[in-house]
Amino acid sequence: MGELSAARRWASLTVLIGAVLLLAIDSTVLYLAVPALTEDLDATATEVLWIGDIYSLAIAGLLVTMGNLADRIGRKRLLLSGAGAFGLASALAAFAPTAGVLIAARLLLGIAGATLMPSTLSLIRNIFPDQAERTRAIAIWSAASAAGIAIGPIVGGILLEHFWWGSVF
Image (cartoon, rainbow, N blue to C red; front, side, top):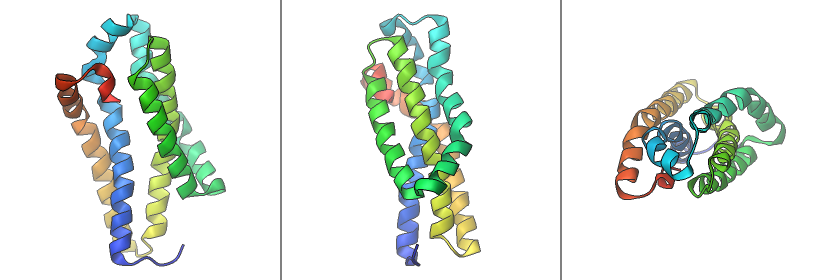
């Protein structure tokens, strides 16, 4: 990868932060929607647990594998395909007619999400060759992830106030 100007490096970081922010928000945005989706989908207690847990389990279980895949097929390619899959899985989750379909969609979201984390972080390493800039970029990336986790329930509450439970996806 050729040397990018400072403006392009920081603009690239903004895009990468957007991906990780969305991923982090998606990990906590669901909590407030559970009562409504449980009622609408007639979900059992076990199904509700799977709806909440399968996303994190898939991400945690596939992070290393997806990092390896990024090394093999390219970080940008994996990031773009993962982002596309994340969007499609989000649409499937939003319009899930049954709890089983929502569980499957959340699994797909977790798999797609597992492509985003290592791709964004490794791209930061490539985009920022200077150690001091890289450290700052990784700190901003980490802060965005933490902020996404924190604001997920707030975003979920606002969406649920105005729309249906599927809007949180």
